[in-house]
Image 1 (cartoon, rainbow, N blue to C red):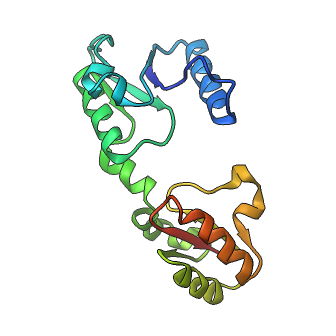
Image 2 (image 1 turned 90 degrees about the vertical axis):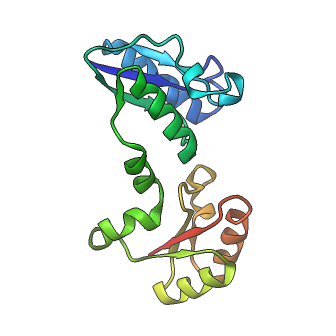
Image 3 (image 1 turned 180 degrees about the vertical axis):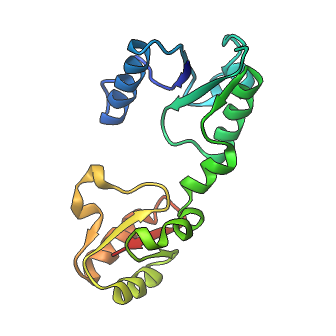
Length: 180
């Protein structure tokens, strides 16, 4: 048995991501998985323990999956610990989650399997990386790309396009990833 912890809410029609969460949650239900809803923000319940207060204790412990938006490391760890206390073992430990979510942690493990990449923190770093890698380049934040806004939001064919994409991305994430 696998337990699903889902952030899907009744407003799933608002965005593609919310509709996708709803579809994954409904698929888990159809497959017979117990599904427990967790809030998208701990502000509504104050702690992860409170978020899972109604979840029964699973004995023997059982595997669990998180169906939701990309959480911060702190949120993932809090939910992981609260689920663990309820006998639910999320498939990735907090350390594994951090490794797969942070490019500088997982790129060394995949270096020979993926295009050459560079981690940048400034527009100048990105321009230098684009010159080194050669155009076109794919640009994304360290966690997520802007593919949902179209390829022109991610693929730079020259320095001017690269500067435009980088300036838009640097508004939110602290660093960027440039890939050939």
